[in-house]
Amino acid sequence: MSIDTESPATNGFDRYFEITKRGSTISREIRGGFVTFFTMAYIVVLNPLILAGGADATGAKLPIAALAAGTALVAGLMTILMGVVGRFPLALAAGLGVNALVAYEIAPEMTWADAMGLVVIEGVLIAILVLTGLRTAVFKAVPTQLKTAIGVGIGLFLMIIGLVDAGFVHRIPDAANTTVPVELGLGGKLMTWPTLVFAIGLLFTLVLFVRKVKGAILIGILGTTVLAIIVEAIAQLGPAITNPHGWSLNVPTLPDKIIDTPDLSLIGEFNVLDSWSRAGVLVVLMFIFTLLVTDFFDTMGTMVAVGQEGELLDAEGMPPRTKEILLVDSIAAAAGGAASVSSNTSYVESASGVGEGARTGVANLVTGVLFLLAMFLAPLVKVVPFEAASTALVVVGFLMITTVRQIDWSDYTIAVPAFLTVTLMPFTYSISNGIGAGIITYVVLKVATGRAREIHPLMYGIAALFVLYFARGPLEAWIL
Image (cartoon, rainbow, N blue to C red; front, side):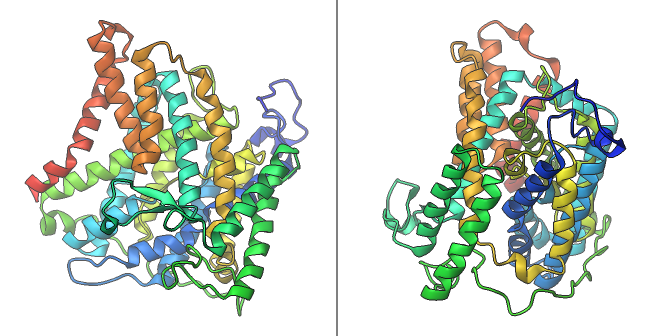
């Protein structure tokens, strides 16, 4: 559905969020908001597990209950803020990858409060880049076709996330002594009940989607969850951590209680000064640089992908209210540090809600409120397993790769960078890696073919930053 610039808005709420103008309706926004929440709700469980798995320099660990409550609180508030200020269907929560960096690389060099203080500093720095116009300028400097490739790559990334989370694809342990990194199911066979539930749920969702049933993705998630509850009640599989044939994360069982009191004791437990003397200036600067580059370009890719899915980008590949979107994302990074739940960032899973029809910030209001309720309804949120939520990611992944036809594959100076961008995102499990490889290759190939005049001046600086980003391993080893 393309943006309708002619349809008259019916009231102030409609005009503010541009519901009619973008060809949407309240019911579509509500459905989209629910779908986005269900595809992201796992973060309320997974982020605490990742952060609580690390220990700081003093050996201290963070409490899981407080991490879960803080994760839901910040995700809810920042998602609502994005809806009201950015007016764009882009939900936010604690960033995967960044949380592991904080837990296993940064915190061991200092205290948890110091580590979260660095996250706050990084968020403030990105906000300054937005307010000075530099972050928006960088976004505009990236060629439109490369932005298209970013969206396509994220589509494949979503698909592999869904397949892995559902257990349809497994990583082969190194002990297997094979050069094949992944396999179908376990031992090349789809031999678990959860995987069967996912496969049935995916086919069910695809049938609804192809038949253009309203709410197909949401119905698919809920229907698959019901099937999962029945299977678990009969088979008593439990979690995969104790049973290889079990559920990936959430075990789909009806909870003993629905409401629980949130623990918000970690809010405000950060320190922006002590890390500099404890870990050293060079170490701290390298950590901040890594956090900044990861957040900076992950958000750019996610914004493009969601905008493409909703046909909300202009001729230059820019979404509406770009500056406001980027500013809220920057505030969210700092807010995550201030709440001790790691940097919050825009979630590519938002595309699932857009696939269900969301086009405005109204969907964010729905998703945000559901996250806030999750602080109290955590037991209920844990009923939906990965195997059910992942069906949405595969369907949306398909929708997003359809824009691949907009890339000029006959011009190798754009086709090769686009190819690397598209493939490296799923193969390295990182949006930033794909963007970086594409940008570096684009600059090198344009210069090598005598077409340097086609390169925006900012692209040289971006490419140089990514060279440093990819070289951070030996640089960190040298500094540390």
